[in-house]
Length: 110
Image (cartoon, rainbow, N blue to C red):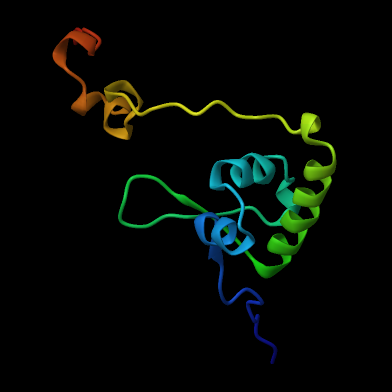
């Protein structure tokens, strides 16, 4: 009988990786956004509304390689705009039962 053994036993958050590498967290996020899904994209969801991007050891190695590439050629990195949260961008606004009455669709039942 064989059983599946999960090879990933821990992940490191993007904040901790940036701190360990001595890099700006926003810049590391931009580099991580350039990585492909095969590189091991992991999102960790907890008590808060937003998820946290995390990395396996393999993905950290790949991220370090990409950081070196983008340091050598910084203009090739696509920078993502940073947006400030607004009442309309919060997750609760996307659910009809949390929206103010003026934003709800008027539906008539026959």
